[in-house]
Image (cartoon, rainbow, N blue to C red; front, side, top):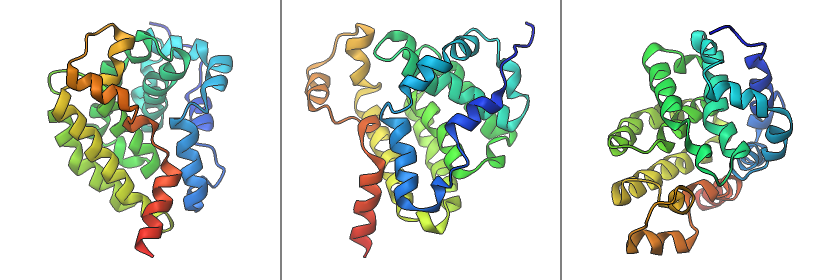
Length: 222
């Protein structure tokens, strides 16, 4: 397949701006909340729809030839579809490919060339992907999460435990249900009574606010 005209740097500039977000708990928490709470939706829909479709159809696979290109492709496969095709099955359609890309990057060393907040999106992609080996992958990530925590700078130290807690929470959900039950209505899957009770709470890992949780950890430690 011929190479596209899309540049991976435009994805990285959007997703990881040189704004100094990593300097304080407040700015880094806002960085995460914007990405996890739908704050990027309109930009992705307006400016990155064609790029997202190109990634989904394999036109950008060559990006994975470099560590930062792999990171950009991972964002385009795992994060952008959740904005462009939110609340539709297409939002999750690239999860298998994104997970393979992330696992390969951990294996070949691309992962080690990235900043800790960039590495976290490898964990997120792998955590997203449902399948028979989901719990095994979550257990594999235990050590990866610790590697990332070890590299989180001191000014963001309170976020280390929040990251661990988030990973443990997702692992618990997969151990309990074997999948992400909140997707059931979108995918047309029947829910068990236990899953229905969980869905009714609306308390899902991907909707927690990072900035607040980090502030709570910092307060508890002071």
